[in-house]
Length: 398
Ligand SMILES: Cc1ncc(COP(=O)(O)O)c(C=O)c1O
Image 1: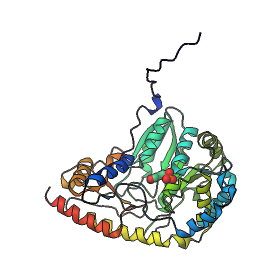
Image 2 (image 1 turned 45 degrees about the horizontal axis):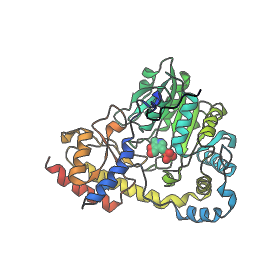
Image 3 (image 1 turned 30 degrees about the vertical axis):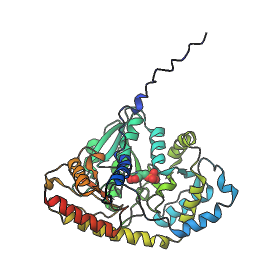
Image 4 (image 1 turned 30 degrees about the horizontal axis):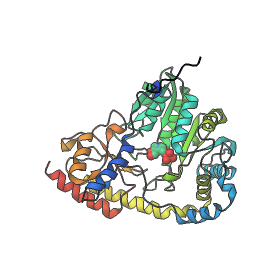
């Protein structure tokens, strides 16, 4: 006789998610919403890695037309629309002089899916994965969910990664080195020479490089992004996204590109995970890549203006220091210990006193807990100036 399931008993959740903390960044969405209901003062959020700049109208207009074709309403192949994969291959050829073929591209639901599929496909329990500190918090959680062991690589005072740090951390169990430049949360970038040295260091140790290039399209002061695959294509896997480069965060579209040795197993996970990325989003991404680069000029100019204002607003306050002006992404990562507070205390204080949201450094690792991440993706120049006044007022009285 079949045993009757006990409907009152709660099933234990899996060990693999035991140590996963909910993302503090997602909580900020909820907090901003809650506060905006009860506060007279507008909440000014430097919290999220989101952009409030609309997708370029050229992309939207063309997308509307293409959505009339019923083909755009169906699944695509697991790997993604061939036209999109060809456009991605062409981007790497023209921008970085790297020759890939469309079989080496896997289109995913954002870079986040590409990251998680990759870790699921490549990480065994107790494999050691080298992750810079500070870095985008999802890396740690995703690696841990796959049973991997996270080894932190402290960035230097200019928020760069030194080869000595990598060498010291490498053991016989090291499998992957994760790179994220332009960096979330620091906005730091990698020079060509540094990238070359890092790739050589990883190659010598037989370690795979995963480069999260989500912010490759957002650089300042004429810095040109250096793609890790320019130095090696066999042992460098590039993961990237349309979210930031084309203000398409809500479209959830990204990709992995690299050697078939890696793309094939990652595709197996992707197939189980989502079958294929959303077809309308794939079409939008294809249109974005086929459009002239000048369609991004307005957004780039806006972000460059915001960057200047945000640096001014935060560095004019006693106790806040910024040793590094970002050359990429849309974040600054100032140190605030001169105010007598930790990153957590500071964030809480300015939220209560000035209705300003920033993210404490402990969201990005264990080392830079006296820093805060300030995103300029979501506030206009006048709002940043207003935030600067509010900060001055509330911090003068600390
Ligand atoms: C470094 C980094 N990688 C990946 C992502 C996720 O990108 P996507 O929106 O393509 O999933 C983010 C989002 O903030 C990020 O900061």
